[in-house]
Image 1 (cartoon, helix red, strand yellow):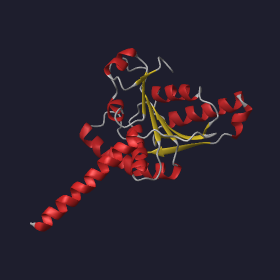
Image 2 (spheres, helix red, strand yellow):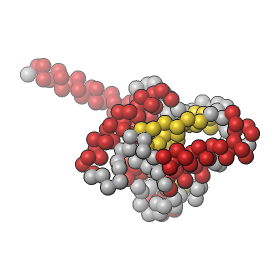
Image 3 (tube, helix red, strand yellow):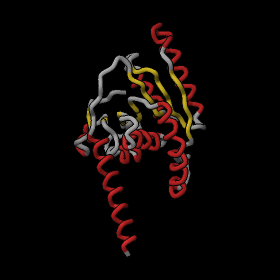
Length: 216
């Protein structure tokens, strides 16, 4: 009986420490100004990639190097990213020396995949996401809704919980979401440092979000 009580007390202490640590990481927004910021961008297939690249087009060269994460079967996004970076370099010679990298992880959920099986594929994706995040150690993660962003953002949060590095997570809800959040948005609303919406109706429903109008 005594052993059970000791184990229960230890488990409670660990749980309390983790909860406190998560709270500290989510509340902390201190960031040291610097000349450049390493950015990790999560791109999804189709419209998600188009929107995120439009947003990146308005960012300066200070956001460098740029790391893109796409699903391992998403060749369309890879082509769009390469075209975007080449066009950026052609328009501004200073961008010729800006480095970018494309990384691939398994999809969290395939089209028409059953929801129960999604749990296992998401865990698998997360298992491979954390080593990537640990290797890159970005200053900022930018995403806008593809399922792939969930394991990436959770891994970035875990990096802070473990005391390795505080990563700023910025989530931009898709412009297609006028009155309701996407599933990824509902999950990451509580985990992101800055949650940006593009319609006033969402700002009314989620007062803690940031409304900047249409930005893509």
